[in-house]
Every structure is written in C-alpha cells, then in structure tokens.
Length: 459
Image 1 (cartoon, rainbow, N blue to C red):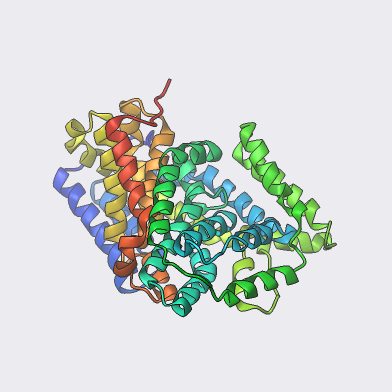
Image 2 (cartoon, rainbow, N blue to C red):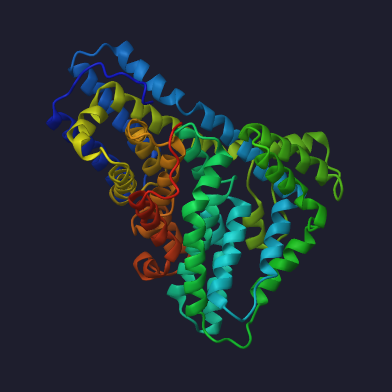
C-alpha cells in the first residue's frame, strides 16, 4: 500500500472535505442505520472514483488504485482461509472444547471477578472471538453474578477484559491476523511482540479484579456445571486433544511460516478426531469448508461450538478487500499523503509517531465505531512514518491492536459496544470504568513509545 504512488496532488481543503464525507457516510450508516460496513465503504469508493474522474484522472489509473489496495491484503485473505479451517478442525478434534472445559475447572468462590477475567481470557484465546466469548460464557457469568448479588458492572468489565485479551492474543482471531498481515509481519512474531504490552496489562488487570472481588463463601455454579456437562456429552474432552495446540506452539517456536503452521495444526486436529470419532472424508471436507455444527441440544454449548470453516471468513474477507481498495484509492489520489504532509514536522520522533498512530486508531473507533477500519486505515496511513523513524513493522501492528482492537468495546455506538451491552444487559458507559485491560492497553503502548522501551528497530 505504501508503495502506491499518487497520480495527483489534491488541495488540502479537498482532502479534508473528502475524509469528512467518508467518515460521515460510514459512521452515520453504521451507527444510525445499523448498516454492515460493506455498503458505506462501497459508497465511499464510488465517491472517490467520482472525485478522481472530476480531477481528470484516467479510469485505468483509478482501477489500478483499487487493485493495488486489494492486493495488499491477499496474504491476509489466505491466512483467513486457514484460520477458518483451523477453528472448525480444532472443534471437531475436541481441542477447543477441552480448553474451555479446563477453563471452567478454575471457577471458585474466591477471587470471583479475577476468575471471571482469567476464564474468559482462556476461552477467548481458544475460540479466537471476543463476541462469541461474551455471548456464551460471558452471559453465564453475568447470570452467576446476578444470583450472587455482586456488582454487574464489575463482572461485565471482567468479561469484556478477558474476552478481548483472548481476541487480541489468539492466533485464531481475525483482528490479530489482519493486524499482522496489513503491515507484512509474521503472525506469531506479531503475537510475541504484543506480549510486551499485553502481559503487563493482563497482570495489572488481574490484580485489580482480585482486589475488587467480594468475599463469597459459596457459589451457585449451576450454569457452569451445565456447560461442563454439555461439553462432556460431546465425547470430545480428552487429554490427547491438546496435541494440535502443542503442534501450533512447537512450530511457532521453530519460526515456521504462519500459513504452514496453521495447516500442520489443522492436519493434526483431523488425525486426533479419529481417536474418538470416525467421520467420513466427505464429512471432514464439509466441516473444513462450512464449519462444525454442534448438536448437543444445549443452546449455549451449540452457540459456542457451531463455528469455523472457510465459509465463515467470507464476511471478514469481503470487508477487508473493500476497505483496502478504498485505502488504495486514498493513496492513489494523494489524499493520505496530502494530510500527512501537514503533520510531517510533528512526526519526527518515535514517540510522536506511536502516539499519533494510537490516537488515529482510537479516533476511528470513536468516529466510525468499526473495529476493522481502525486497524486497516491506521496501518495503511502510518507504514511510511514508521519506516522513516526506523521502527520495524511489528511495532505498528502492536499499536493497531492496543489502540484499535481493544478500544472498540468501550465505544457505546460501536459494533462491539452495541452487541456486548445487549448480551450482558449492562450499558457500555457503566462497564467501561471496569474494563481495565481495554483501558490499559492503549495507555501502555503510548507510554512505552515515550520511554523507548520494548521497541524494535529495523536493522
């Protein structure tokens, strides 16, 4: 994307007006009318095409901008295909059900809010989806908190914090894969580098929830017991089902390419399936494409385990390609370059570049309310700036997650905010002060940028 050369140099006021129109189109469509992001982005693409034609840019050049923009995301597209397959095969083999079952074993009356945070984090990493975690185990924990008459805002804050830790650090997460791919960083290198800010945020959050946890002598764990019984009924809870996870970690430590690592782990998951079940090859291929379909009869379990497959990634892939195409046009028409030139003098230091990129990701979340766009547009806009100050790409991908992925649930009109408040019955602004992990992540990433710690420079 950053290699795309501008064919025109627009006036500053034109660039500002176009960006305002795009932001207004996307934010009003999503926030007011509840549209999926695809349509307003497509409308914004049409707006940019019209602007280009008005400026006498040849249509072929405009088309090249679209293609160059979409082309920047092809590595992400292939990773998403393998992520979809990995999720479905991990469920089929019992890897994800076993990890979730192990997480529930940790629930005790002591340190109730801290346990909620840890368990939702484990489930989030296993599932790779914050919203799925919130809608399943999160709802169960809110029910327990209601029965125990403890603070629902704190419980919701713990659920959101754990779910988005999992979303951020899971190799199954689409936002994690997107952040790595958009700046050309290896997936597992990206995850390792995020640890510098993520684990301190996790530790501080855990201590805070431990301190806030009420003194409970006994807990009605009926909801948790129902989850565990349902998982056991699947017949997939076995010690050997962690083999695909071991394969994933082993190949990661060996620094194998992410795509090959995901493929090998998926293959091992298929092999493990035959230890407790003998599906036909046609069933295996069906699961790999269409995802796993859980039929336990327990609504929460089926919602948690019915997922994955290549087909499940099409929504994300189409959104990524549309957004990147729009980004390609913004660069081809010189709009991004025009805006960045105005702040070029303020972006000479490493700390200011990191702060500016973090603020951009946060601002897009607030203005548009869309998680993917906060990642995509921030990555596209600041790649050149990070190169100029000598920072490696993984620093930018970390900021995109620290200030993009985990900030979305803190915005009341965002996609995540609306979904979570509806699921948990706790308004965003009520749980926001207790979503410690989501609040700490952007603070730590900017702080480390200013003190110059945990940063990696290009050799």
